[in-house]
Length: 163
Image (cartoon, rainbow, N blue to C red; front, side, top):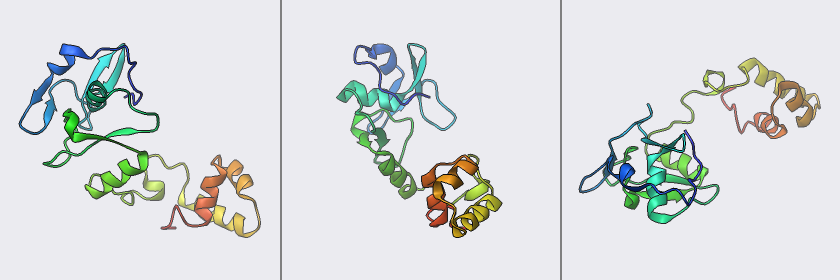
């Protein structure tokens, strides 16, 4: 699933919009869908998110570092391609928006239960003990193959608060 903007020279055209069912509010993507409810459309061998394509077709390229977020009147609709229901935001705004709409609970799978966790609870306890004994964040990071900033956040309890 690509998040990059399409080239300005790519024309979406009739094929794309023929797969959009316009209602009085949302414009629903009726083509291929990812399992998470977002539509996708293949251009030059890449599957691109349909709400991003719709926003780009209406407004031009998406600025670097920005995401296209939904603001549908009837609640979030990941299949919506109505440019009037889409807005640009940062990753932080996207996270806050998802939490506010009940689509994401950052504390739902804390620590080692998270499917992308690199550390175990015992690692976190040891990292904090090493820091108390004077080891630098840099050395801790090297030891556990994490960044210095990640080691610092663990020790300051900005992350892994439940341990």
